Image (cartoon, rainbow over all chains, first blue to last red; front, side, top):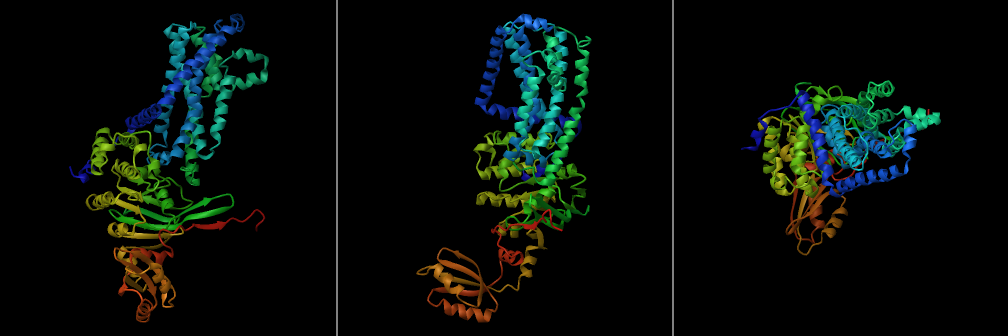
Length: 290
Length: 342
């Protein structure tokens, strides 16, 4: 076939199908890039297992009576592993996108993407969020599986797991909104990545990954900081569902659910902020600057 | 605006630093017709890349406006992107994912570019074969040579069959055979499919062979627009003498020194060593005075010929822009007034 002939054939995908394909391509090829670093992939799997084992041993040291006093099922292994499992989503939602942006900008591919960006990066960003979610979910399920193997008392009732899945999705989406926002800011403010690592640590610390939220009642300032973080509410709901089998319509759960819903606009705000910073970067000539 | 593929009006880009401003592109206005092969020439730092990046919507101008097939780069950037294929030359390899194979890179960008899978596969396969990359298609791009990456970048720019191609040094780094192939192919794209190509290059031969029109840019400003023939005519007053001397028993440095010592010689434009001779080109004010004096000064060398010559495109560029193409010319800087300045 003559080389010119291939350009006589027209074809363009449009609408939601095109958007979905862009998002899936962004996710699929990111996964390919990630797994091409085989050693890194292996180390990540080892990290998940070791973290779970560490909290199992810490769990042996924590008195079940202390947890019972605070209104939780007296099983610290289940308590900590539920926190660890959900917190895995936080890094991939909040900090990974800015980290990815650093890679794209320094490698030069971000400029290349900007030249073919047909939807203000929405498809690409959704694909990257999807990738982060897929990877975190893998880690999540491995952690929960290890938890079951170590005797953690997670619920076996699918109704609670379905509700927990909804809470996970909501928490991830809200934090992904923060992540998209941060990724946009990173195009201009290159020092932001370090701050995000700190922010992730702060979220995990105040969110109560390793201790019950009710412990903070004695420290009002810390408690107020904690309740301003959406992860705190997501984690509290998640734990109550999969450990204590308390449904979402329980009066004890409603305030946390409402608090979490208050943060939903962040998801949309994130894309707007990204768009603004992308425009600013194009104005300042910083799309390819690292 | 719709009568032209590309129109720019007073397009200006100023890079702002803490203490100063650098005018990279200074009120550039050009019109490029549909199906035209348009060359943008200029030394390093002249503003070529900044200009092409503004058209590719990667940079937002500080002043002025540009339209691609009637779509504004400021108001309709997405429509603009759909119509152009942009390829960054020199550092082009950076625009690819090195941890993916060549094929995966193309399929990824095809998805982002909304090209249906079957069309993308067909185009990618044919273009890979045409540019002799089919054997390397499944290798990671990190293992590609510079030339291979440039070819892949070109394929990527063509995947969505854009009407307009903006190519920054597309043949730089290619071997001679591949460069010829790419040039022929690009020319066919304009001749047979009516695609518009805006092309930057340092290779004068390439520009002369390919371009219907040329713009010369220097210090962010367009200093000439016309056909390659017009650019030569514009500098016809350049009086050039070409001297060919046998390289046997002669030293080029001695020849140059003798020529530099002559008051009738204004500039030594170029000197090249060929198989058995040296070819030296100089500018003079008066042929009739200069030729006998040059012959007298070089009487100790085996002079094969001293003759009048027409300017090459590169020499024409030198005359118009005031610098050689390979020279790095810093863009114009404007000092910002300090806080206390009135």
